[in-house]
Amino acid sequence: MGLDIVAAFFVFGAIAQLLGAPIKMPKGLYQSLTIFLLIAIGLKGGIALAENASGALLWQSLAVIAFGALLPLIAFPVLWKVGGLTREDSASVAAHYGSISVGTFAVALAVLEANQIAFEPYFALFVALLEVPAIAVGLLLARGAGAHKGLKSLCHEMFLNQGVLLLVGSLIIGWLGAAQTSKLMPFFGTLFYGVLALFLLEMGRQAASRVGLILQFGSFIASFAVLMPLVGALLGAGLASVLGLSAGGTVLLATLGASASYIAVPAAMANALPEANQSLSITASLSITFPFNVLVGIPLYLAVIVQ
Amino acid sequence: MIDKRLAFELFTTLLLLTLGTALVMQSLPGWGLISVALLVGGLSLVLRTVPLRVAAE
Image (cartoon, rainbow over all chains, first blue to last red; front, side, top):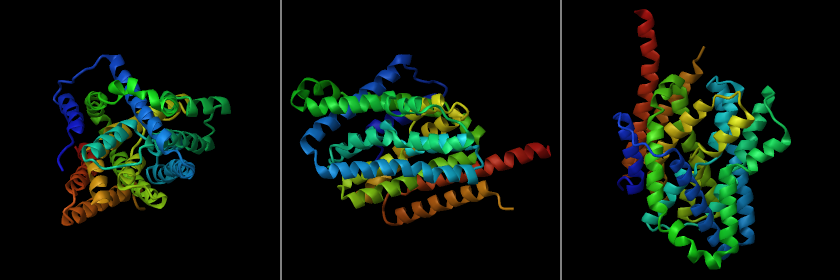
């Protein structure tokens, strides 16, 4: 199995940056692409939810929320006790690794669809659910150091950040208006892969532009950023097996467990935990874990789980 | 006193190498893990030896 054609745009963007010829996009375009991907994934999930809603889904959702809360609890002691990071930095990085990356999920979706592997179509719901608990756990872990804000602003950061809001909003719209989505899907469906390719081109540039920071932060964070995805993928695949998900669903839950946030959590942590070094978390999740998952992880999870 | 960071980095490198080799032997895509193991191990080595050399000079 060669490099996926969509993922190839990530490599292209990274190589151009490393050659000193970065492909620069207008500032607002990256945000527009992110909004498009969130709405497209939410709509697809909502349409699927209208056709597949069941009681079992409630239990699966609760298990997924518990999974999202567990991952930062595993990451935090490693970062704090082994890595020697400050409590705030450990909590912030742990929250990033407990949450998920919509970009990584979109790549996994594209790879499954390209290989015609079936998966539970309501996975967008799990994506939205996994965004939230890690932020809460991360902030609770940091509270020992006295870093906290009021409950109201904490809840605002967790439930009303742009990523969660767009995913949940479009999921509900897709669910309630499933019969009318033919009006929207030519745009959000057909263009999905093209937009994802543009998004990955920019992500490649951003990831490569932080290579120098990896050297600055040291080899421990690089080791953590490739080991933690494997732990998350293993636990995600185990949970999928317990929940009785299909092979495609297992690949997706493994990918979600392996991914680390670089959109929703950084925004929440910058606001709720300003003492933490945001650059450290974003460099680990965006410049190491994201490329690791796109280039090595997803093909690996797919091969191991499906074969 | 054991350097916990070094132990963690060595553990990660060896785990990735072992997993990658096992996957390749099963005709599964393990070369990615082996490459990452070499990168992580190399980074760990370089970032420890370069500052020592600079200090010695």
